[in-house]
Structure formats: C-alpha cells, structure tokens
Length: 359
Image 1 (cartoon, rainbow, N blue to C red):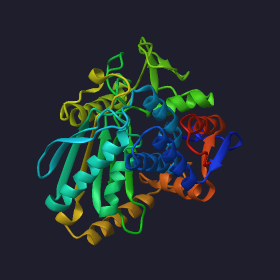
Image 2 (cartoon, rainbow, N blue to C red):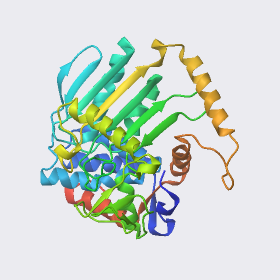
Image 3 (cartoon, rainbow, N blue to C red):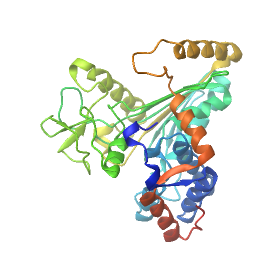
C-alpha cells in the first residue's frame, strides 16, 4: 500500500471499476498484437496491483508496456520456451516480450512440480518487467501452497558503502495461506523503497524522505530525481551502515543470484536498464503436514501479532498483506483511483492501437 503522502488525491482522480479496467487493459494489449492469453494474464496482474493499492505497478503501466511493444523494445508476439527441465526445476526464456506471461507460466510450472514432488522452482531469463511480484506468489495460495517470487532489475541501488548504482530494487514476495485471517503476503523491495514510489512522488510533486536516495557524492536528496543516471542512486534496505544496509545489500545479491546468475540471464549491473530476470518457487504444504493444521497455526500466529500492545500513537499492529486487503475492499466497492492525466493516457493509447474505449 502506498505511503500516506503518496496516496492518489481523490480531487485529481477518476474512479474506474475493476472489471472494465481489466478488460480495457487486455483489449489494448490484444490490439497491439499480444496473444489473447498473454494479454489476459498481464491485465489480471496489473488490475490486481491496482486493486491492492500498489499503483506504481498497476493498470497505468499498460501505456508504457504498449509503447514498448509498438517501438519494438518488447517483442510481440513473443515465444516463451522451456530451455531445460527436471522433476522439480525449470529454466524458461521470456522471449524478450511482456514479462508477466512468462513469470505466470513459471509459477504454474513450479506449482505443478510441487504438487507432484513437494517443491517446484523455475527461473526465467530474456525478460522484462513483471510488475507486482506478489501476484505470482499469491497464485500458490489458490492451491494451498506457499509461493515465493522475485525479480532482478537494472542498476538503481548502491551497494552498502558505495556511491554508484550497481543493483536493482530486486523485490521479493512470499505468500502463505491462512484460515480465517488474511493470508500472509509479504512484498518488499530490497532497497529502502521501490523505485516506482520515487516516480510517483515526482508525479505528485512531493518531496521524498531523507534516506530514500543519495546524490553523486553520497549526500541525501529529497527532490525526486527524474531519469536514471550517475547523478543519484537509491539506498539499499537499511540505508546506512548503522541501520543494517548490509542486509538489504545482501538480499539484493541473493535475488540477483537466483534470478540472473542461475538463469544465465545476467545480474543487475550486467543486464542494464529495462531488463528483468525472475525466479518462482512453490512449496506444497500437504507434503509436510495437513493443510488445515497449517492454516490453524497461521491464524494463531497472526492473531497473536494483531493483539500485540502498540507503541504510543499507533492504532494497531498489522501483518504483511493487511493494508493491501483493506485497499482491495475499498477499491472493489468504489473503483480504482487513477490520476486524471494517467486516465487520459490509457484512453489515448487505446485509441492509438484501435481498441475500443471501455472505461
């Protein structure tokens, strides 16, 4: 969920119902030459991100993705192929097209393998942006599995003690089913903040907190930068040496290893901007213990955390996934808020590719 100062203001937003929004996104991709199934997968992922309040990875991305298709940066139609495979693993090529379909297929393969062998994994190369990584981890919830997904990206984040961007924001998602409580869904960048939030702050005309990014000499900056360049870099999770920057730095390298080195697609500073390699894993809970017992213990743990006494000024203790579930309830009922300028861009790209305007 976006930080409070990054919430889309209602007085400059259009509320769009989720289903017409999903259909609009899918129709734009189809009109741009994307196969129907791949268009639907990508539209589902983008719309879910918008519903869950992850606006930086939501439906408005249809504009830049479609422009990339039209420019030839994203290959369409793409060929997603299995390069190698074992009982529990798979290596896929995204075919340099939309990242979402390949990541979805990779998680499907991981889940199928987990259903048969208890665990399944896939890693994907030759790819682009896959959006909200929680989408892929959450696919496992539908099959009473634990899902893990991650992706690397081009350099945006400095290593601990460094000044130059060498790592991607390299997010990690982990999803585990609960019973009566909300499922546990962790979705986190290994940088102090996802890069999209800096872009959103720039769109909204608000400063970013000190600690999110530094200038060329390592000095803190609060003016949201524009394009990537050597004049600035994001901080790893933990920010400074005293706050544990080595942890975010290490996690970012872990993502690079599983997504980029294991797949052979390349690590962040090698692949450059605009390319992404991914990793997905599914764990079949039933291979370890009865699913109902697992969910019952999950509920117990979540309730214990919710019941924790709060620090002064706090209303309640939250668990990962709670804010997004609240956003989803609101937006399912009241529509997805989209900045007027971004709404106009979606309508414009639909008209440009010859898709019917549905929102």
